[in-house]
Image (cartoon, rainbow, N blue to C red; front, side, top):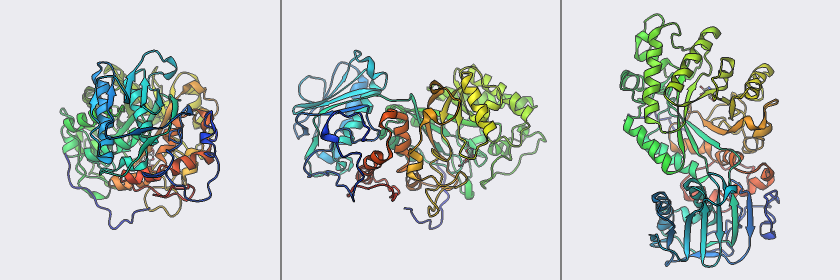
Length: 543
Ligand code: NGO
């Protein structure tokens, strides 16, 4: 259900080297550029260098003739998997508008763009792929559909940026010859969208999902409840959404997802190989729920709806029995809608809950998540309570986070709690780039594109064993963001950097090389209609 949104008034739009490559075909990738770099656009000469993609691949071995998509090209989907055919249809959906070619998706053998499942490639894992390009065909092989889908994203990036446009463009549509072999560093590569502070429509969420897919992310964390709005229909507590969802920061009318809206988001995300991780933030950040049901308050009085941006003032009533009926019903209903493994219960900034109450509450909330078959995720304050076995803590500290807090997280990690890292001064996409950024916040400092990219998740927190790091997340909080254009100004170009930290081998990590590869994404983002921030540190390719 979509109500009208708050409009911000006249807010001006803000606007490897170490790659394990084997051949000279990519030499120069690591060199600092002297000016704008041509994108090798539609009619231009040589195809884009194999390996000049984001995230950087494990291995790119250029060689042999390029492959060219022509009016006669077919997309061949091997075997009888309906999912492979769906990926073929998805690829055709990307390529048809810009090439203007028919690109039939067929089950038969022969040359063309070939998508194949082959279990025999243990080194590719569950999400990896191999892409081989030569004069007659480009073949993407993977052990499972997710790998094929990621391989298709690589193929998109190897084609000229104009391939992303929605109307016929001039070719030629060449893919450099050679082989890319690729698989992710981390299993958990996530982006979070805060749909509570401002509500975003299903269409806006789908648009973001498509952008995440391009960079091989595999989780979409939805922050579905907070002080300013409850965004998911709960049948047993209907006022949460109908009353608690009817405003947002700034006082606009907000909105909420019906169950069918939410199912549609889950389905769409799954079609892009992203798993939705729902978050119901507890026991703090609950003003919208407390305003909707007086009985959830210790004093039995419902507070008014809240449209400001303070944090830490609300808490569920830990001693009351009804609190746990509420938690049980909400977790059950949201878990039923969510095929994925994870359930995020927040747990951050419970400043108006006593420590004792917090620990008692988190014990009970974690048990409810387990009862409904999901794995608990909580913000890292969960490590100040007692994380259940298998629980995951999401670290969101920053350079000024105290040693005691870091050590608490490290101790939990050493004791088996896995971590997802989203340091606020690196991974938070809502932090301003610099002092001139109009949107966003700056409590964790300014986060330039370089700062956001240039850290190592495996070595980020002292005392954390490498294997405790499950992956990374780029959260996007929406206190200041109201629509897709504003989401994109903050997410791009930092999101691809976090995606690369999650996907690419540590050995490829190199800012000088990365900024050149990122610069080459500029025309692609433009072709997709993404109004990204032209960070001055990046040599943006000419369009
Ligand atoms: C914090 C806070 C959120 C804010 C966000 C803004 C976490 C986990 N809790 O991050 O409520 O929206 O900062 O950057």
